Amino acid sequence: MTQWMKDRDRLIEETLAFAKRLGPVTRQVEPSKAVAPQQPLKPRDGIFEREDIRQRVADFKATQNKFQREREEYYKATMAKIR
Image (cartoon, rainbow, N blue to C red):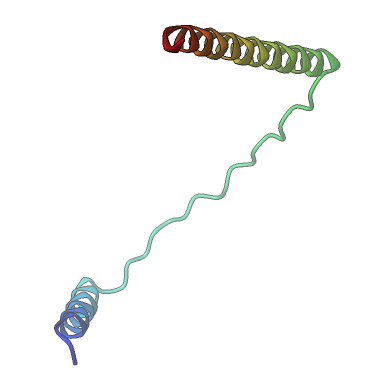
């Protein structure tokens, strides 16, 4: 038996002995609280979400176009130096 197995078994024994010393523990359990169902989306909320998505996509495309232009400018500048 390896050392970690011995340590594990000893820990289990100590934990069981500790639990026996405590004796039975009784606790009052609170009844669960009812959770209100999530409000369904209003049509306006869906419109706002779609507009937000459209705006994010447009921003992403603009950023990608900017990166593409910068890469092309760098390429042209590098090729001009080489020539």
